[in-house]
Length: 459
Image 1 (tube, rainbow, N blue to C red):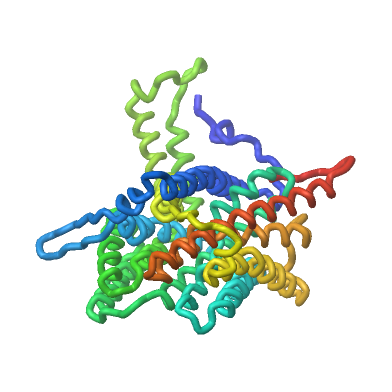
Image 2 (cartoon, helix red, strand yellow; image 1 turned 90 degrees about the horizontal axis):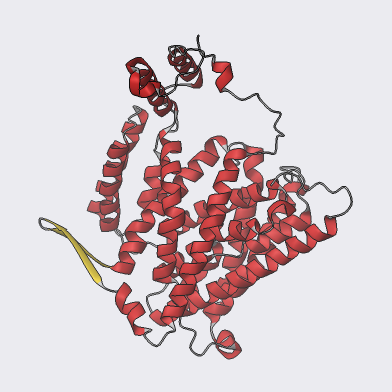
């Protein structure tokens, strides 16, 4: 008896256009990781304000050297996390950006215009607020700090509301946060790079050309790209450019096509499934007993590997590591801010803290809402399905949660530890207030919209 492929495929159901199943997986990963992120930040703050507070900075400033012959790299533990481990984070961000540009919410002009407009407005207004408050001061270079949105924290807060908010709103938040990350990476590369070593820069360009040629000729080996990424990281670090840029650059050249197209995949899988000959009572443990069945299973596995793109495979494999290890580790190493002397007096005395808090808490919602309104009213784009302007306002306030990327830019902006501490306090305060305010707005809006016969729609 031949086993029909039709029996193995569940009956197709009608799926509404706004139901985006792959996004659900991504959303839950990001939302779940925000819990670890909060715990890591809380541990860092508690450690930095405990009776053994001096051990916090001493531990993360512990030097660690890696040598190969005459080549040697000596960094502190915190610098290894910020310069090396965070490369993996930026690599995954680069993969997400490429996927969104190719097939996602940034793939067409009309689809991309709304989140990109929101991201641009949400970056420009906070930067202008901070810069105007610090104009002419040594702290003016921190204007990039309030520009960023932390996608994990923002989606984690939105996850609390579940079905109370439309799915389109979650997609919109993810898309503009990814576009926001793209802008933040450009800001880091263009404005937070100090001095260029030409010889290492030329080496970086040469390695990047090799990666581009490999991508053009469909080289799909993960090991090859990992080795090239390691070499590029070393060259970019030597050039004086922030090394995390290497992660983004490599990600942009990861192949986005599989060796098989879908038609060939279905043809091969169908052929190997047809080779399963089973008696009426079933095959049982035939894989252990029947070599032909085992060969068919292995061939199907190989076909699955060939149809999956390297971009999808790497993003799927690395995203949990980034969400549940890299980002919490970064928060633990960088989130320890001293709360000594905290009060309104300190807040008004520090232009850094005031600029960051006003930039994230007010600048983000003003910039995101205004630029979104302009994009819709000019007819260049439209709001997602079931999303109202109250939703846009609420999610734009959540855009003021700038934790991870803002902390990262803060470490690049200031050399003086006091200014870094002030920046961290401003980021934590603004992120907390933005989260509480944004979730309150969306919750009140959902309560007002609830009523007899109300259909919350899919989440």
